[in-house]
Amino acid sequence: MNLEFIELDIDWPIELSVCDLRKYILSSLIKHGEPLRWAITSLSTNSYDMESIQKISIEAVLIINEEKTKDINAYMN
Amino acid sequence: MTKMEPLPTLLIIPTGIGCDIGGYAGDAIPAARLLASASECLITHPNVMNGGSLYWPDPCIHYVEGYSLNLFAAGELFLKPVRQQKVGLLLDAGLESDLKKRHLQVADGCVASLGLDIGPIITTERPIRINLKKGLSGSSWGNIEEPDILLRCAEKLKQAGATAIAVVTRFPDDADDSETILYRQGNGVDIIAGAEAVISHFLVKHLLIPCAHAPGLAPLSVDYNLDPRTSGEEIGYTFLQSVLVGLSRAPDLISNSILDAKDKSVLTLSTLLGNRDLGAAVVTQGALGGEAVLSCLEKSIPLIIVSNQGVLNVSSRDMRLDDLSSDKNILYADNYLEVAGLITALRHGINIRSLRRPLDSVEDLKDLS
Image 1: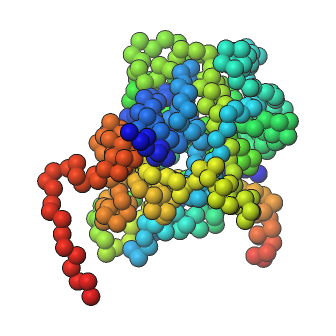
Image 2: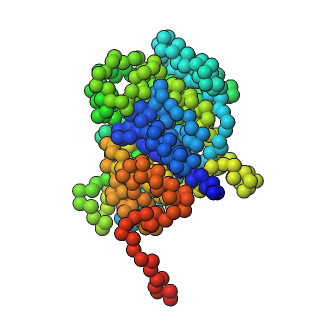
């Protein structure tokens, strides 16, 4: 088992309510590892426009379980 | 006069982001005491309550580590108040002999002078090795090089009867580091706080018992420009005492998934504290992108957003909250004094609108069809 710090940018679609944002972020993080601690640390707000997609920056520490990763890779192959 | 019921309130001041209040050494304890007095039931986390050598035990404050606090806010965990925890002590093999002895003496002192139940004690087979990191945002983070060793020792403590765990790991000495100098002078982020949170999150995730961390550091030389907010970390040899006091009465963590249908009876649930009981969550303007804040929004828990500047700028406007204010019950405050007033009003059923001017007239309901 290892811990890994990552910085990740994801899109926040306009149709996605803030009330659904936590699950949306978790579903993105889980692709990289098991989320241990994370937070949104900035949003792109240069041209705040409710009609457009916002970019969310996330910092996170993930648990990387090598055994699980091997299993997933074997399954994917 | 009838005494009003407590208003369970969650107080979150994120760790490692340099908040004006709560970004240093337990300098949010006065705010926590105030809100505990207003609500008579405050749930908050070690970053708020740990003041190095300084601490304040308050029966109205529930000390809940960040990972478990996130689960609590999401409704995946209940809190069960206890009279006393048996606090196991996990020491990193990286601690030098004298530094280790200092920590053991703190444990002895807490038993002798405060009546805490401390033990058993275990030392890891190898140093855990902590790396400190800083994100692009300026927040502090960190990593554990030997997580398996840390976890094995913690599991042994739990098997040996510990119901909570205090961890002391040797942190890199960084006295000359510019970050540390700025922090001690009240102008920087606590560079070790993020790594501390990672360690306690890691243990709580795997063991589901209260855990908290104290860093093992060599004493620093006197700084004549020290900010008072950091003083709690300068007046002793360890930061362990506040952790032991906090953990000694931290509530048990009861996973929603292990409660079967019988356990979920009204009688059982009435003895537990769950997110459904929360009357308010006090969160920091600029740090609204944390997991617990998002859970509160998801569960329609009333938010009080308070100004408390840190390095992040994830604001209510960026998070599209300003448009939700009316139906999501979001309130704003300039400081924790104002928050105490809002909590008092909520607790006593006083309409917040009645306290503000101008005051609009009541309106007829239109469009009944």
